[in-house]
Length: 363
Image (cartoon, rainbow, N blue to C red; front, side, top):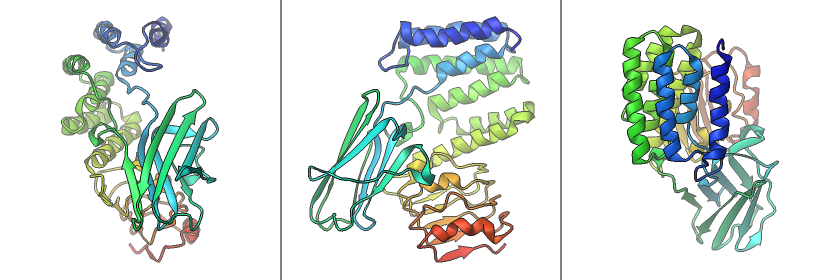
């Protein structure tokens, strides 16, 4: 922060460009202008590789644009009398309306987010008991205070126990932008440049971190091993932020597993991935079984999104408490062997799991 003028200049560019050269969506920048900015910031990073203000601006340029509001999942279960919706971004009921109709009639239902969150991409509601008879056609409409709208329709045929519709975003683009040919070409050149700068400055964390972010933006699966290698280097050259790099590695590893799941998969394996946390669990709301054993998981709070889960394996982790599992009404089996749970008070929240019949704690 020694050179405040640089920070100020880059900050103003990030604030002014979306207004002067607006892109197709609010808050974005026209692509031709964005590509020119890469050339400008590249000069700055080569002139003074240690000036972090230019690297911060570079990160803003490569950052993912705020996605348009849309549905990733709309699901109704006759057995559970439950509806689940998952959106492309977090919403809050304080500034967003969610309305649902069944056969054209508005339903009076109370929407909730997992773990009583006020802001979440995942929301669910219990439908009136006995209301799901015969053929049903559901429609959900969501509208923000900025008048951004999205809607989805879902039929549930007589005798059908559940129905769902997935969004329009391909699974391999859930966590990355679908880049144009021009932007892909520029980012590949940026990656080559950052690699060259890393060769010149092997102990500078900024080229390393920028390489990781560029590889993830271009194709996380293609660069998976390189990303892992660069994160290991980052931990060595910047040990004070090793937990951040561990969490970043966990995030990318979880994204890779989720992207490879098929639409109808009901089980997922996250075991042995060196995870310090598990991210994006809103995409796992329909799983029945999940294996997260042999990691370094401490917090179970994100698992509150597993609304349909029956079995969770968490053996060989660092779990101390079970907070986050209390809303899992269908959970029947939980394995917590070889963790750090010291007394029964840490298990108290499990009393609110009405279906839980098997709990494994032996080491």
